[in-house]
Picture 1 (cartoon, rainbow, N blue to C red):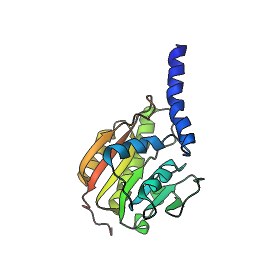
Picture 2: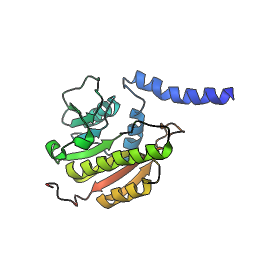
Picture 3: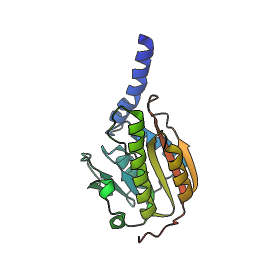
Length: 204
């Protein structure tokens, strides 16, 4: 049993050590990096919305990709302690109380790495995750440009297929992606929407 445990810890520590070396506050950055390498969602000059942005790894990586001409807006209930460059704006707030209209409707990509406070009960945690995902999708529908992209983490559960169908209805194509950097025991998976259809009235 010991060799297996040691192997698992080494795997987990690999990303944590790499994040520290690359000056990112969390290993989660490599999930977005894998998504970016596969789908090339974020481009120079893009405007990005990062929902659940604490502790700031996705913010920093997205800003690196968008460059000086881009803009990255992050929202989280928790304070974000990274040093934000001129292209990063951080909003401390609740996505459920957010007025998407105040953000504008010209974002190229909406990212959501939001996760609920877990209870240890899989059904409860999955339901809470689905609620966050529905909120993220509602915001994306209001702020994305036509043709924009959406990336959302969800815990697999009874509401998973329904959420995938909701994303499929709003985008030209929909993908499901499990990053290698996700912990093997994790139930998280990413739903990706490509080519936003802009099928709703953004003024509502």
